[in-house]
Image 1: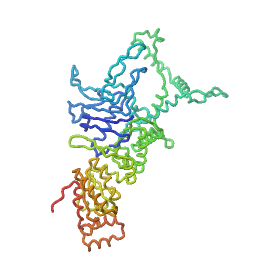
Image 2 (image 1 turned 180 degrees about the horizontal axis):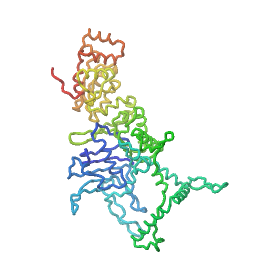
Image 3 (image 1 turned 60 degrees about the horizontal axis):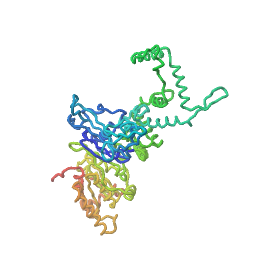
Image 4 (image 1 turned 90 degrees about the vertical axis):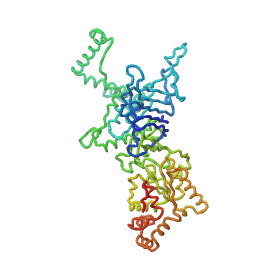
Length: 561
């Protein structure tokens, strides 16, 4: 099961969004753009056993507008199956809708209320049997306007927030990773094949079901716990309850009895704590530092993947927290494995948790002057394009999704030289959120540009007019023209050409004598480093058109001389 479509109106920073959610979905954006609010909207309506009007307050309403209503609608694929009665056929529930609204009439007019609705594929309330079917009776149907708790109960939701408190992920937490895993373990425990040998006498052992043996042990434990004080308390409660219900506590105890009972097996699992032993010292893991608790939570997530759990919707805030780059890459692989059979939706600031070949899994979250909005790519994807991108991608190139402005260059020479010129021009590209990506050759410029442009990222392209990458000059001229044509279709796209190559422009800007002197000075370095060191030379001219390129990249107006 997965959420295929999400609609949010008037929730926190979101005025309105309507987005499709892929099986694996990365929400990327700057701080305070609204990424967490999107996850929170889902968690608010699905991540609690009972949802009521108290799940929201006026601070959750967009702009704190007391007249506005919050609405959150989630569509599911496949639909949720619901049957009001065991004997009845199930109906498809495609969409669940939650609205934090007002009473329109009556004594409570103007007060807040929560409306929960469900809809079929046609956007109408599904029709269900009005009462249990009986043989010979004509079936009567009614529309299902509310959302039964059993429907929401069929949506296993797991939420891992930025607060990596282990107690929120132990079996006692209703929507936790371990709860899901131990429910499977408990189901397996009740399998008749689960037996244990119990000693009956010195020379006799008997196969007994594990559940039965557990129940016997619990009875023994209760017998041990039943002190005189325990029994007196139980008797007091029983006698008072009988009186309250109109029974005689002396003569009617057989009609209605009250007593304390020990755990059943799942209750026992839910009571488990995780302990840590170091030497002779033992402590609850919930009392350890944030870094260790985070490691345990993520290890539970990895165990979830190894158990091949299916059908859950997993929401994760910043999975990269507290992790070194190597562990980030490892966890990303885990999320991708989990995402094969579960939906995984997460926020991230790390390029280790996205890849260019899977650009269709990425949603860019931005905030305008008024509201959060989301941008996805409309660029078609196919296996050929994906395989080409797999060959070219690396973590540095994944940074393009995090850029406020992006400059694509052919190789390392420009990538290393341009930041040095920017320093000399007193332009802080990092502060502006600008990124320079080398694409591994001129032929790759178009592919990378199509992806970034499809996300609405302001994109600049700097290329050599005469490149060694393309030997056929007619083909290269057509390719150059197609790069230049990109800026005609989108005002946020810019292109610049070196009429020959970067080195020719550098030679022209410096003059032959100065160029040869600097080449001699840095002769022991490879070409890209050589270009960077020359660019760092204070007072040396900056080749055309790099000043224009860097002012655009830093989103600055070029100073007039």
